[in-house]
Image (cartoon, rainbow, N blue to C red; front, side, top):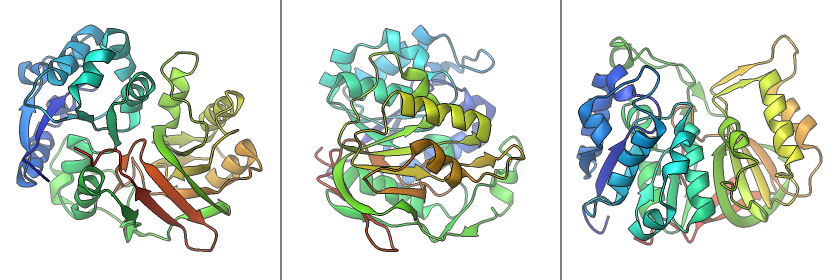
Length: 332
């Protein structure tokens, strides 16, 4: 990094800093050990909680905008995701956000904030990196940390699959998250549905959250981009509905490339239909490269994606290669 950066921490959805206080504090220490200063948002410092959320949408937006308008802060990072970050959108000042020249991190439910901001401004976002799920990982966390630093600092680099991956949860209500060893599987690499080569601006989003934004003005134009889609819980009947909604909205019609991440949970509801079979059924035959089993978001470790950067997707042979070029984030 060119200078020591300051991260402002917010809680736009779930109050996981209260639920999992030890893991949250550990994540902060990891970020400090990586060379970052930390500033906590007002809701986090007050420890306000309303069951599933910290506060109403207006109050959560105030915390976010306070961090946006704090000149000491360079990066805004959520504690975790949740289900209702979209409640902040009506209360955001997009001009102040763009003028702040900061960077917003996060994934999953934070898709709603990133898509709304990316659709309205030229702001910088990194898809990935939240305090508890990314930096609160107690063991074997070097890959995720390196990927975040690449997205923040490197202008041109190749995305490399991790050697192993896991979708096993360790209980953070107990000490399991730091006392037990996570079960990992050998990574078989990124797999191809449709071969091809593509170059374009990359967007990454959570499927369920993205679908919830359609019909509003807060969705970027995905034409001629490479789109990364990921899901936490890919229960097949709900996933079919979500993927078909994206198809009906025309999302798949004018892409340069399409990438599906590994879902954390897949439930075929006794259909014997695999996730990739469902993708093929809904997306159909396309003239651009499509790959799946990408390591982004809810499986561990996860690759951070610098939104709106130039991406090259080479799926012309059996080995998929993906490059970030002209990283939109690295020009700090």
